[in-house]
Image (cartoon, rainbow, N blue to C red; front, side, top):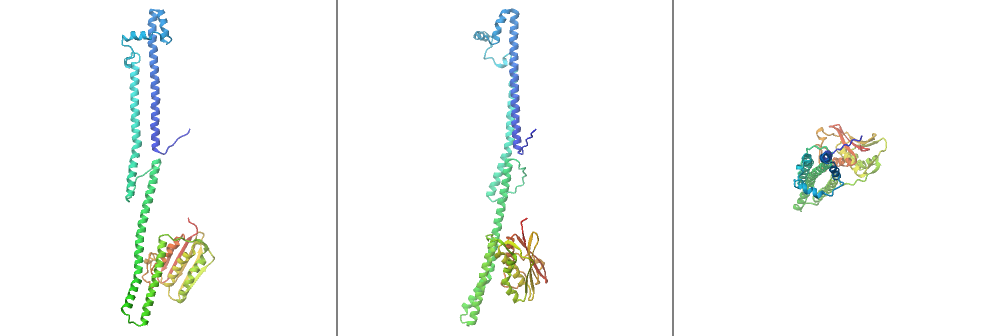
Length: 416
């Protein structure tokens, strides 16, 4: 036995109404067949009674009339109709006044009228049950669509079984609404982020610009100053211009990373070689402070990455370690791997970071309270974080005040 199961409740209801119509059609047929059979039986009974009466009175006449009753002889129909018309028995006689079929026909017509009324009621109720929820849902979806157009997202708390076609449409509509809501949220965040970036850039450029204006005013107001002082102010102006150039390049680089427009040229390449590329330019700076800059790597490890950008990310962290480590200090870089990760640790024995500041060091333009570098704008670690994240990695830090810090750059070999 095959059992059919329909998930859509509306299909179930439609099948129920269809079944009701089929059952009523069967009832109509049965009633009609029974009525015809009853009429046929009564007509035969009436004709039998007529023949019986005639046979008792005139046997020969009765035998002559039998062919007429059986339909074999209809020659004198008009004469018979004329005679019966005198007794109001003709085609104008209403069915309910017919002594033979009157009772049967009346009951049949009444039953038919009841069945038609029930059928009509079932149809009306069924259509209402099916169409009313559809109308309400479409009306509600229209209201929500208008709200989306007006940028007023309605929080939808309605529960759906998602069984029928309309419910599947509502599910897709909800998914679309969520995506629009998320897109609007992201656009608002990007708008706020862009505003903050512009404010930060303006703030960072304000200091060198102010210095340049000041130097220019001094030179303009003291034209009689000696050449040595003039050269000094010119050199100071040059330093500020170089700082502005570096600042603009760095900020543009950061803006590209934040807006996700950087196209990374990733390839399988040695991580050890990338680390060496990042620390080579910093060896002179470490040597000037008599610091030990050590790279330890048990074996060469390859990873799919952009050498240029990852090198810059590592360089920013190593540079930060050099700046915050005293003379004669030590910075050690270790490279190792596990079955699922590749880790670069950068450890120094510098001043360390206070616990309250650990959560802030990767923030844009954040400078620690102990920072004494006037050229620092606090963007290096933030850049490193963005670059490493774009390479399926992350940066974490452990630090103890007065003992030093360890930065961990961890790459996932595969996306889990």
